[in-house]
Length: 160
Image (cartoon, rainbow, N blue to C red; front, top):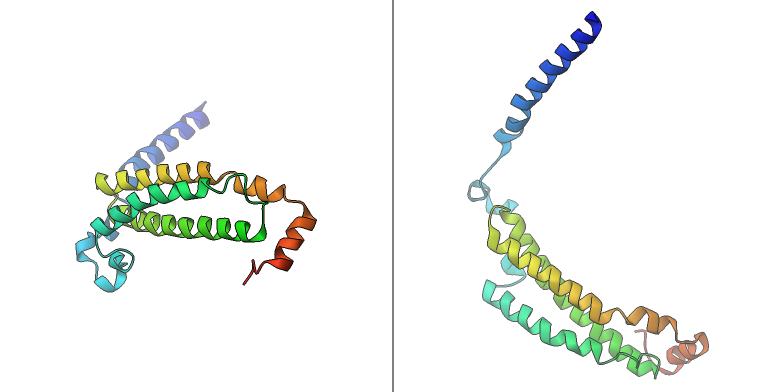
């Protein structure tokens, strides 16, 4: 019984210690972003010069997403159609990633600010929408017979 009491007492001491020490752990290293030298910060203006430019691109993305849907059911028609569809898909995906990375980095600068967090969530929802609209690509490409795909590569300059 005495050893059990010792264990409980030891556990209680460790628990109280952890409750008092852990919350202050690392606080000496906390630095306000304003106190950090610029050379250690990323420059979001390298991606977008302003929030307005980001907003404009984001709104344009919504419109361009519809272009991806225009190729549904057509990927196996010809090599040139497949190439056009893939170029469109990757161009829009690249634009989306640019906008997403910008807002993600913006939200990481100060996670206490709610506006950038909301913008990041909005981009995540756009990403989900884009994934839905482009979900047909893989199955459609995989359904193109190998001989037809070989002909696409032979007669179309699909890879450069």
